[in-house]
Image 1 (cartoon, protein in one colour):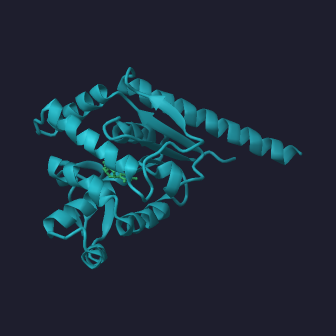
Image 2 (cartoon, rainbow, N blue to C red):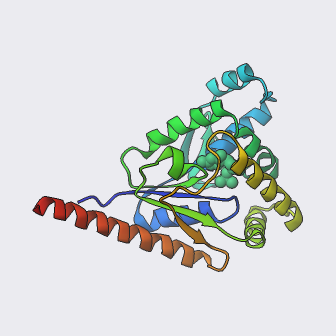
Image 3 (cartoon, rainbow, N blue to C red):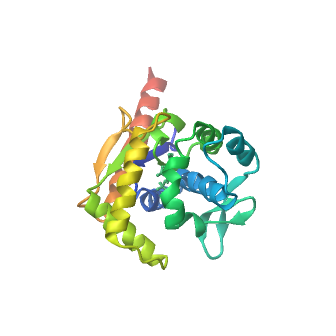
Length: 238
Ligand code: DC
């Protein structure tokens, strides 16, 4: 009986994908993959090293110097992002990185560098992954795909609360400006633009609280696992 699936959560920035995915993974005792953290880590490295992102060779040389992995960290919790052995979980959530990450994620060399690693992490199933192209490119065969959306107001208020909790006081207007810019770049880029996979379920979280949105996805996952088990059983009986 198959009881481990891949759950792909895609959607716009600020819909609460990462925190929801993390909670769903905990409920299901699954692993969690934050694909956005990997784009943020590459962006952080490029900013630190002043890499000219318009020069193909500079980008490729920089990517060759990058080794990424997720590890638990005493201060930054489970699954923190490590770059070349150093925890950068705090740095990658800054507005400086947020302001540059969408542009970096339009670069095909960056995408193929990360997608290869993400597919590798997904081997073995029992995984919740969140991002922009999880259901369309990284795991097109994911058993459950959810596309999360929410009103701009709800997204900005949530993102502000997240940043405040991390000690960063950014105005709602500045956040809205950042989210609108990122939506435009994420949906209009040539390589793997953000879009809802044909077989994804749309989940509008504007009027849901956190526990409700987590529960909805856990319920969807459990009913998917049940239907796969029933299908497998029918296959055995035939
Ligand atoms: O989920 P996030 O806000 O941490 O993602 C940061 C950026 O990374 C987002 O603006 C677009 C990019 N991204 C992507 O292109 N593909 C993914 N699978 C995940 C993130």
